[in-house]
Amino acid sequence: MAILSRILCVLCLSLLVHGCYDPHKKYALHPLERVTGGEDEMAARRAAPFADDLVRYLRGHPRKSGSEFILQVEFEPGGFAPRMDTIGEVEALLVIMRDFPRLQVAIEGHTDNAGDAGKNLKLSQWRADWVRSFLLERGIDAARVEAEGFGDSRPIADNATPAGQRENRRLVVRVLNFDSQPVEVSLPRQH
Image (cartoon, rainbow, N blue to C red; front, side, top):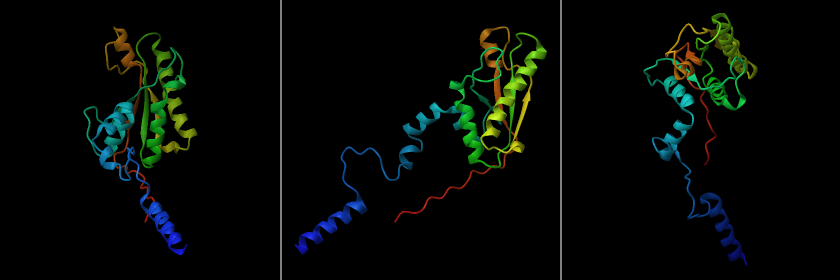
């Protein structure tokens, strides 16, 4: 009986230390090599291009468009609050700002040239202010986020076409500082 108990103890200890063999297991204890540069990483970049682009920039990867990133957010015509099903990139910005606690940004609102220029200017400011308020309400320090509306004064496409107008209606995140470092996270070492 003592031998059987000893064998069961060794077997249980072995299972605790090494785990059970699972021929269908598709994960590893060290998945980094599977993620870095692999299909999983490419899928993540396609799923969240704004966040991926911004984080890569903050980690020192230069870009053609410099320090400006367009938030893909949709608004009802004339409305200042975005459709809630389109704020994923604003939420990603919140996470990035938490991860990079010294990061400072300016949120810039832009419109197309349809309608009154004065109303467009106010609308663009309200939209930029909405993003800033979203971040501040979730704990980001007010000194880290500026908001400015430019109305239709800085088009990036031809306002004569619907496609151009769509491009001109945008929110831009401009990075104000370049010395950001991410928060260091350390997990307890497992033995």
